[in-house]
Length: 285
Image 1 (tube, rainbow, N blue to C red):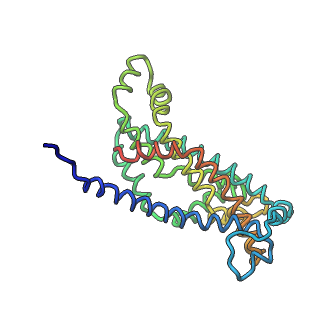
Image 2 (cartoon, rainbow, N blue to C red; image 1 turned 90 degrees about the vertical axis):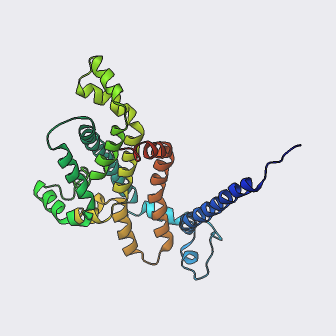
Image 3 (cartoon, rainbow, N blue to C red; image 1 turned 90 degrees about the horizontal axis):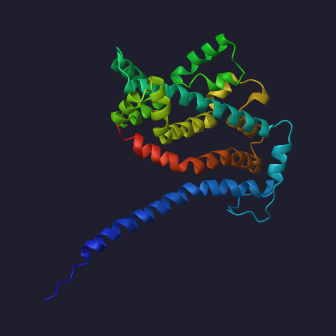
């Protein structure tokens, strides 16, 4: 006598997958629609961009907005783009150096008041960042860093999130690797540089990308410390562009596209490291 396996469990398993797929498709469409609208508007003429009739795709595509925004001497978008790239790269590099060394010490070394120090570092994550605005400004002013790249790179580089994130990753590395390196003659610096840093590569790459995006999207702090037009970063410069061209939606959208392209490139290139770093480091501790 033969028996047949009921198909009900299989159908039950398929239904959640179908529902999840539909949900993800809807969320993707909601996220992608503003980007598509921004891109299409940047290729519209000023008259079409300001028209009351909604149209997703331009009737007569043109690059006049890009030509105007990239050639206007009063709006040095390329200079702003370079400023943002330089400060974001330097800031993320400094964050990685400080967070990596601090996280390794808190995770793998023993010293007095280590737990107390870690608690104090984590406590700063619960303080709103806006509270540090005035103290940072006063410190930068005393150092003579106003209207300089240093004012954008240094003040927020020693953040608690990077230390916490990398510490969780270092805690998940088996101690036998560290002990084997010491037996082979490595000192503490050798263990850190030759063993721990390569193993923490995905987490470090994730922190670098997140720090890059934070610096790239920062708007309030550059407005406070930068005064000359040539020193502005892209978010602060685009705000000036908006104030000067409140009805030129084609120009505003073209500026938004220029600001979005580097971020999308960085995310596409580092997507694999971000997923690996978050999955391996974020759940350990």
